[in-house]
Image (cartoon, rainbow, N blue to C red; front, top):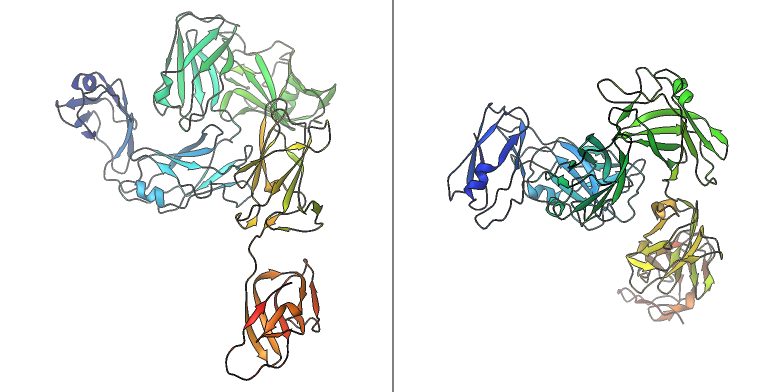
Amino acid sequence: TIELTFTEALDKPTVEAATFTADGGLGELTPSYTEGSTTVRLSAATAAADNTVYTVRISGGITDLAGHGLAQHSFTISRNDGIGPTVLDAYFAGARSNYLGFVVNEALRPATVAAADFKVTADGSDADLLHPGAAASYAPLSRTVWLPLAQNAPFDQRLTISIPATVLDVAGNAILTREFAVPHVRLDRTVASHVFESPNTMVYKLRAPLDAASFDSATFSITPPLGRLTATYEPESLEFRISTSVAATVGIAYKTTATNLVDMREGGVLARSSTATYSGTGKPVPLSAASTSSTTTEVRFGVPVQFGADVTLAQHRQHWTVSEEGVTRTISGIAPKTDDPLALVITHDPLSGTSPAPTVTYTGATDDAGRVRDRAETPNVQDGGPFPLVATDGVPPRASSLALSIERDGEPRAGATHARAGDDVVVRLGLSEPAGTPNPRLVVLGDAVDTALASPGDRSAWASRYTVPASPPQGAVLFGITTRDGAGNEAVIDRTSLTSGEAILDTTTPTFTASTRSATETVVEFAEPVHGTLAASAWTVGGARALGAAPADGAGAPEATLAIPPQAPVRSIVLTHPPLAGTGEAPAVAYSPA
């Protein structure tokens, strides 16, 4: 018997009409509810096993006495739980994929999530990509932990989540998954694929759940029309379906348009239109191609596809070519895309990047395992062609150069790396391809800064300047540049792409302490390295002007004016001065520059 406890009494007819299901082989769940109670008892056909987490799902319109629907449609339970939770999946959400959620197999203790020191890193880097100062969020009894990402988190790199052992399940067991590799990147769309499941049903596969509360407000249309449409979505599911009253016609491409379809965090709007071809019992046809990098191109079909058994690279090359302005690029591999059964990924020699678009061609003339076929029980093999496709640009721009420099009073400070209040930090960006519209957007320490063409007519070169305020955060200047190419591919560029220069903000006047070395020498210790021109006469020791100054390490004789170069700053100096009177008290040391 399973007991579900709710926060208030339920409407009994809606409980009796609901369907309760569980994974893990518990069989049919039969509900029992007493009017006015807050507990629903579920009788399972099979006994639950120890140390096993089960998920109970509720479908149907259970409501409270006022008619309000359930806020949660799935629950995790376990019997004699002595095993820690594990991570099952992770996905991005939000208006700019600025949240990373990871899914666990059972509910967690919220306090342990709130106190946990999570970390998110990109391949080959130890930099933490979580938003500074923002905490993870977790709804009690849910199975998803949300991590807010920093603005400069990469869109095209694989991320890994590090989870401390202090995260516990409801029974107090420590989480077993300490690191989890996110299965896709921020650049990937939430809708992974869509395909006709039958002549009257189209199924959409998702990389992240939708906002179930707003799904009923979404509207769909299909062109050519297929009659009345009915869309269904189960909360937290990774797929939804559209049923049509008119059957699709074999070989016709149907465009589906969605409005008000959003994900779970901050209303990130998903792609609004997409196309699928109903192949019926026909042969799969390549519909589109897109360059996803200089060495990879994706080809999409209307149905899930595969190759024959033991296919070889030589056989692939019999069927596929990738060319750019008439020059063939050697293919080094072809494979179905891991998380999208409708796509094949072709790996090839680098494209030049100067061609408007490469051409991908398939022909099925040769009878071997390299022919594309669908995944039906008796596969339909594509033996026709050629099918030439012009690949669209799916590659975001990158920084070919990124330089920082510092100006003071309008004059460049060659070689300078530290900036004080009132200085200008100049950012110069070179892109691998011309920027589209709008212009690249620069954000420095949270403030948006205008960008402008560095050279008239050249949208590949940009410049901007940031004036250092009176009290900025100290240290290396943090910034992010968001830009799009002409095809709309977005990139976020940050200081990890720097090719030259540096800008470290330092608006705090250095402090010092002093101690006497002898009657005629006093050592001054600075709180941070200093450089510049230092006049000994600007210092007084015991009321008397210093006569000379030298580095404390003995690197030189005392000088009336000590020049300390920026490339060799010092932390301490020695002042020479008239003999001190032996009063037994430490003399006062003061610095008063003219």
